[in-house]
Length: 118
Length: 420
Image 1 (cartoon, rainbow over the protein chains, first blue to last red):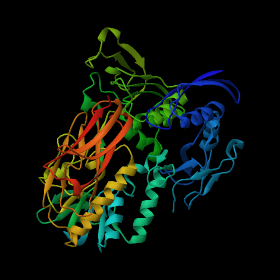
Image 2: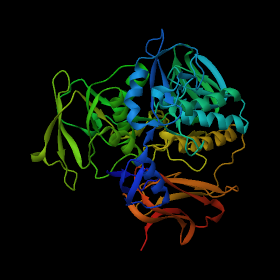
Image 3: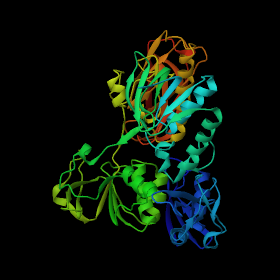
Image 4: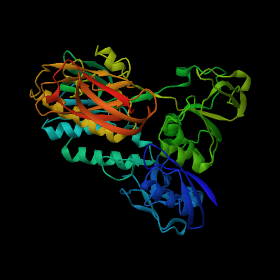
């Protein structure tokens, strides 16, 4: 498999071409520094993202609770996570970083509040 | 009228106002009061639920609400006072009074030792860039759509075209995609991305959203609701090539076409405005042409990172407190900061060269993207600071720190030197 990855480590934004199979990288071209190699390797083998969105607050109209994944989740699971989060309602009060959904989609990552609500 | 008194009054409770208030308290000002027109503190960060804030300041990637909550907590601990739901109508810099109004306090006059302007900025709109066509519903600035979706739970549309590749536009592209909308494309007039590369990768590429560089919207179609936009490539003079225009169907258009410092109060007070930044001209204390009035954050110049806003605002708060306590001497030797090759603007615009403690950070933006350059600050032929960069571009602010004790000439010039 071939993939072109734009490095986001620094503003230079090198276009790195990676060729490999699964976790194994066969060749890499176009990187500008070592940090680019690390980034491209992670992006090729297991791209992850922090997911941020909002959750409905039970009994409250017109105010939403901002939430995030406490750690990055696999990129391909973003929409699965959104499905679960969309169906969720929380009660208040809530403290900053209270867990809203534990181990979302078996990623081992919790969805937590990014705001305290009284 | 309700009369109040305080040492430092701060207009705006966003990241700039909060950082200024904290610094003013830490410097020893007794009564520090923030006047905020929203019903909560935090400013625009309340709707910026995405991560990417705080990497410089805290060394970790925070969301907007996490970032401002830290400042609100600290302001509360220090005893910063605030009026919410109160809008400032007038700044009177001769009497050092701020007139504001709100349902809780009625019309109020706040007498202060010093005033900090931290009103932030507004978005440029469709009218601001004069896009021809009809005037249907479904046209939003990216930030107002962000507020509707993230704070008011109102979905703005299903099939979206975004004009402008600024960060807010790209972040809204991801947000709308995650909420189930189809983002058809992002259209950018320039031949380079306006925002950060990271946002292109994580907000556009991740969701398969095409980025059309050197393109623009030439016409908006639709009667009640927008039904589509004409998208055309532009030539080297940024003129649309009409024959190549294509109709792109959509029910929503988001404009992410720039931010404008909100300086109605500043202008009305007769404070000098820099024509390039559209914000008040300041010295290194973030002091405006009116000595009791200080300014910080996006009202001075539009920043790309809130971390910079916090740092700059802490300077404003510190010196505003010193001024209120009678500890800030009048500027003795004002040296202008001059833009040299490939520099669009500089902040601060002047330096009081008599300052003894010496270090001043000059923030600036380039005019054009350029590779392999050296950023240089000089006074005549003497180099005050220099720094090599692999790449500079207008979307990412640069800075150099200089020592005021080294200023011997009549101005400080900052320039971008192309390496041979």
